[in-house]
Length: 318
Image (tube, rainbow, N blue to C red):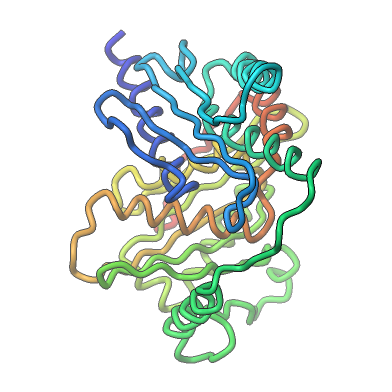
């Protein structure tokens, strides 16, 4: 029994870390010990018209055998609207008993707010003044990590073997995140078989900068249509528990047929738990950019139907 509780607590903690990475400032810790959190959800982050604060308390039995205890806070949310939204959240829970559902809840609420906003006059389209500055800053980070090529962050497109080119999936590279001299960068490739996982890793390691990273953490999820199961696995590469956390994030987002590798170059200053936040942020950003994240309705249906997971055998690419 104790072992089962430990597994449930680990899954709970991994979900909390993933949610913090996904929602950033929208995610607020009310009481860490009691596992009470608040998520501020709006129809539009830059110019919100409708907002709900979802407060949740996560019991130790969640997600295995108990749902989150929740409260919806919004002065305008009353009557039938409140009843309908509560019923939607409880339906999502019943469809996914034993699974992590906070992400599905938050995105369901956001969808409701967006629909409500579209039924009324649209608000002005106002961009943040700092958006251009943020983009320029990100561009500087990309350039800082490709001294040999002023156009691409990591040029991995030169393939000597023509046969390999026909089978090697395209590899995309995310914007680096730097904190206290440590740098994190995500790489993404579509994969449909373990052979492609190995090919992607081999191709990445041909790049000297990636090969010299302190850690190359990765996780992948491949959906087997014939068996309706997921073939998935992960690798810490010396960063204890980082691979499992990355895989858990991908499970929550319900992505399929994709591999994410996060390279970390250690800068000499220990980051503590922040390193997991940066790993998850890098991964989430590139999954969003490449449109791997489903709508909450699609995610809920898929999670309900495809809970079977087959763990791949550990490999030794490193």
